[in-house]
Length: 312
Image 1 (cartoon, rainbow, N blue to C red):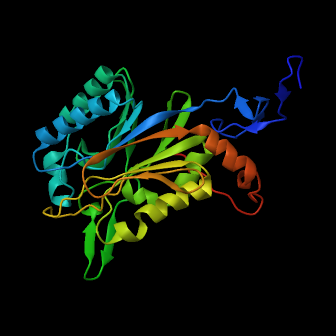
Image 2 (image 1 turned 90 degrees about the vertical axis):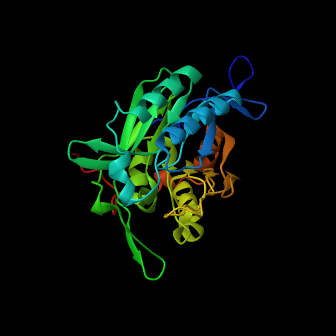
Image 3 (image 1 turned 60 degrees about the vertical axis):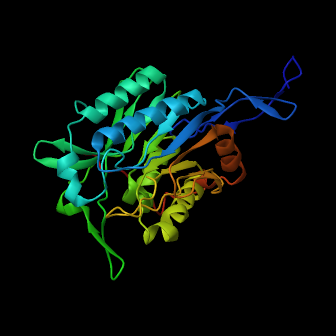
């Protein structure tokens, strides 16, 4: 206790620092001070059609609507500017950051004064195509670019066969960025199935992982929420899953059900299959709470096993 009668806690976990070092904080009446409280997120589940111009305009409109409701970070879904399918990627592809979609996102972020996680778009880079997520700060500057690392190649007999690798190239980078002093990690759809990738982002200090993704009507009901909850529970952080709305007339039908999951592994907010926007507060104190009560991060036996990043 200091001279002002405020109890000095011995330490608390720093949810932002990559090594989660201990630091002193002050406690008064059961409340902890000196920590970043968090921010308000909007997860936008967009309806996507064949008209690229309309898709972009709809995304911009929803960004401004989310800002009016207090959102500070706004996340869009996978392939929000184009139908999802290998037959569409080449037609809808554009360069980053000079393409029409990027210019619109940059302008919207700057005009609204928010950070925009721009879902994904088909990116053209020379002869290659990528499935790429761009992030824009409140000044409209490109903060980060993540190319989908794990391509969606699956074959479930009598259900679904899909091979992104027929058209797309895979990214080779782990991608994180900072927003208001909070580190955030990016993955795209199939990346969600790989816990090693999420572990590396958590080890770099991420408090939130954002996954734009278009799970389908076979894998969606089985694994969409399950995998998100697994990543949140294992790593004791927030996870945002951002899907397009379901269109049963499309060649590829997305599951929908965009969801925000807290560090306890509990879904705190969820949409259904229709277009809409989910608003929620990302409370960083929840990360502190979970990691202090169940301290698995410092209990890992890295003398026996570990997850390491291979430099590129």
